Length: 301
Image (tube, rainbow, N blue to C red; front, side, top):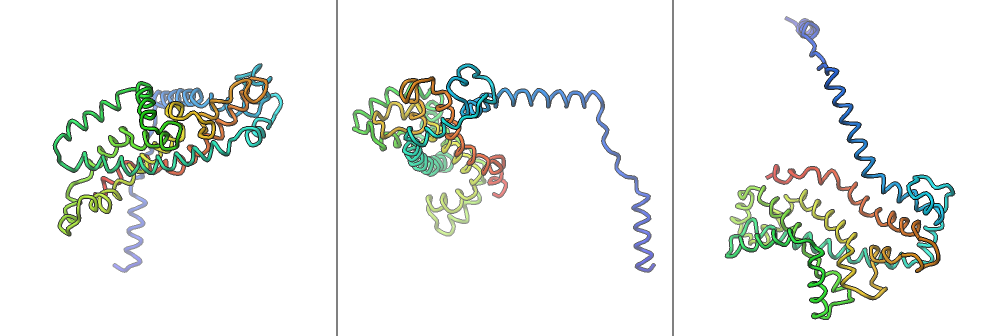
């Protein structure tokens, strides 16, 4: 058989081969699917509706925001709130303070939480179980319960009303340690054996071998740490008193009626809140695909 005849025979067999039938969806299954999407769409709308109100109300006047608080579109578009944010309100100073604290806290949490998680998952030392149980207990305690003891400690150590007092107590997070510990346990121990044979110590094995494989967990921890420190309010409220140390959260909270003029100041507060949400939203959308692939590091091992 020549090459031409063989090709013709293969083409004939392909034509005769039964084509895969399209999977038919019953009317009941289709109705259920449509109903599910409708319910999910309504739930998403309920969840995002307050944020849409914030965006719309930031372009309203004080009178319009008071009379029509739930309207998405303002009757008269006004950029007065955004103009006041960059003229009357020290927004840039608040943003600089928040950025400084967020960068330091995020970097420290990613490093120290991953280091502690590696120690709890890989190293064997006396009291390890007790420390892990204490970590779980800390996660179970509401943060508001710890505010007064934290305030008293800061006053006693002379760290109150300073950047050190605002940063040091939150550079380590129990939830972050738990996340890293659980992820490190999903990585096979065998990947570290070659490094130990080459004479690598514990820290070098952690830094050069295990940590690069934990990239999905590190990115998740990075986003949670960035969001948590950027939006932190209660700790900054009890760790500082000076207006120069205001962050975006405490600064926006200070924009109450009567401080910067008459009116309820709703558009001003909501405009500041909308601007505050931009960095967190950008960080999330940039790294969202990396968050979803949480098993990437373990599979590579």
